Length: 194
Image 1 (cartoon, rainbow, N blue to C red):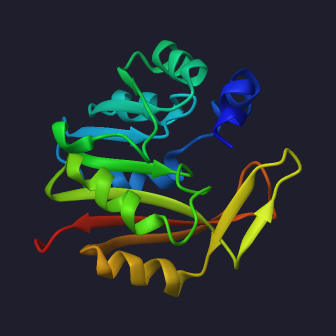
Image 2 (cartoon, rainbow, N blue to C red):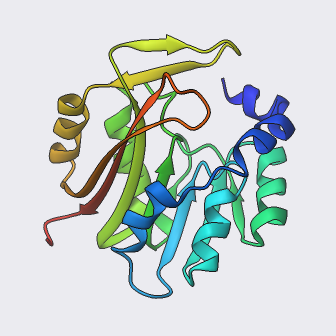
């Protein structure tokens, strides 16, 4: 699966870079303090990095595909860490917010909690998290061979509750690339601080 993004990084960049991310990033931005540090995990084209930087935040990308990481650096002018977020040691990082825009869509339901726990080592207490996932049941196979895990609201919200994530904002939006896809968007606060 991960090879898809490296092998197709130029076409993936082209298909995603010009989508306006305001609909899902504005609710996050409203929760952040000026100049907040943000780690965009699975930053892809760097589209969201650029949006956040233009609004005065201090974003850093995290991307597994070297090709996409390079394009994101050039496009957004932001640092991008290269690595596999399922294996990376996040304990040495510290950010005010974490962003997962579509980056967890290939994880199984079973793998989800462990990845949250691992990546949250980079988050300050009371930090903010943006997560978007595809709505549905089971998995779906895209024409390009990628497998996407789908989520019902009650299932993902149960995982959030078990991981001390408190919902600050929720949205349900139709995909700008595939109108048949519905995206669930959550802005959450991590920890007991409300």
